[in-house]
Image (cartoon, rainbow, N blue to C red; front, side):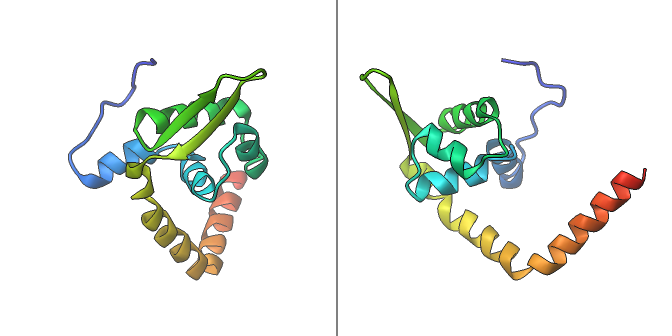
Length: 123
């Protein structure tokens, strides 16, 4: 395990959820697993812009945080499937609410993000 540059700050619920869900693809992975995409290759197809290595790291972290479980079937070639734990299922309404908020504010969010992107590229 790598050493942390910034010490853990777990003083409130927002700190805790940030620690568990920090990672570009974790929320999408949870959502797609909930939708029934359980195999690593299916998840890779759903998120093609993510490297397999990064997805595997984030899947491992979600497993370590007890949000998903990994089943390895004893066949050749090995078959792996992920599923949400009962604990992980409790996050789905929260993720859904965030997605709905994003959909409701899509135009504004796109404008803000594009403005920020232009400012960064001008520097």
